[in-house]
Image (cartoon, rainbow, N blue to C red; front, side):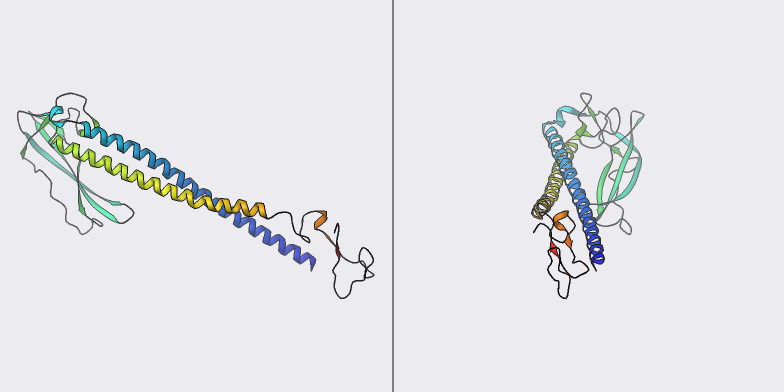
Length: 250
C-alpha cells in the first residue's frame, strides 16, 4: 500500500510539474507577443507622426509646376488584391499608367481604390482613372530630390496625379500609421497586464507552500516508521488494528 501511495504521489507530482511548465511556456509566449506589440506600436507611432508632420509642412504649389504640354496615356496596368484586416476581407483595384511626354515614356505611381468590402470574386472591377490615348495634365518638380510623401513613380518625378492630392494621401497615411501604432501598443500592454497577475500569484503560491508535510518525501523529518514484527512501535507501544507508526523528531 505504501509503495502504491508513493507511486501515486510521484505520478501526480510529474503531472503537476508538466502542467506548470506548459503554463509557464504559455505565459512566456503571451509576454513575448505583448512586448513585440509594444515595440511595434512605438515604432509606428513615431514613424506615423514624423510622416504626417512632414506632409503638413509640404507646399505642392512651390515644389511642383505644370508642364507646358500635355502627357499622353500609353498603357493602363491593372491588378487586384484582397486584404484581411482581422475583421474581414477587402478587395482593392490597383492601377498604374504608362504615359509619354515629348516622346519619352514614364510610369506613374500606383493608385489604389477600394472595390468591395469582401472577397474580390464575383465583384465588379472599378474603372481606371485614365484610358489609353487620353491627354492629361502633367507636373514636374521644381527642385530635386523631392520628399518621399510625393510618391514618385519615375526618376524624373513627372506626375499625372495632382501633387496636392499626394500630400492629402500622405497625411492620411500618417494618421493610419499612428492609429495602427496605438492599437498595437494597447494590445501589447493588455497582454503584459494579463501575464503579471498570473506570475505574481504563481510566485506567492510557491512561497506559501513551505516545507513538505509529514509523510511526504522530504528528508528525515518526513519519514514514517512502521511497527516491528511484534506489533510494537519505536518506543514499544502496541499497534492495534492498523499501522500508525510515529513520526521521527516529533
